[in-house]
Image (tube, rainbow, N blue to C red):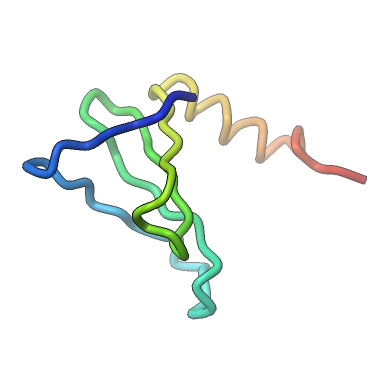
Length: 72
């Protein structure tokens, strides 16, 4: 993961899951040039953004699906 700065001339298109409610507690994702992904907190759209290469994001999603981040 690395910090991401997006030029004003090329804004990202942020989306959230269709499973998200209207409570504002969502993670939003945007596709980056080259196929990577950016993630941010919907409550703080001007706050920090995490970026992943395409391979890093694939590994992150696979880990989440496999329960790798589950805490007992």
